[in-house]
Length: 186
Image (cartoon, rainbow, N blue to C red):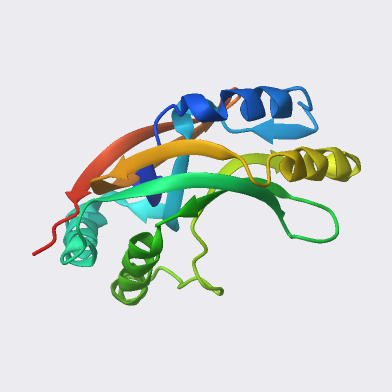
């Protein structure tokens, strides 16, 4: 049986993001804001994944975490993707996230051997806060991101990466943790 999956780091509910998040909510439904309890950094989107691959995915995730010590990531600044033209994503920047980029890189080769396509671009650590659904709202979303471009939103301790199951529903996705792989400095 298949399930929709991704590998991520959970951010938890960040009180420093509440105001920015609330302002973005004012643009709904043209802008779809990620619920505060669902905030995460995606290291690798897998898509439809066979359940019998879960043990092998756990091995790959643990190997990618070996040699990476737990870390603290600072949430600082915001912007949009793409940086010019119609904004499609409003993001918050992550400082000190280089180890997450290393983990994402270490996941690609082994996952490709299981049939998961590698990313076509370099991993850029960020936290997706909203997706712009209606292009005419792009300028408003970009303007909000520019207002918070140098803001501090707090920090998060990262001790593990997670294999998450995503079930899409009328009120948005529901995520459950399938596997946890701790970061280990050994």
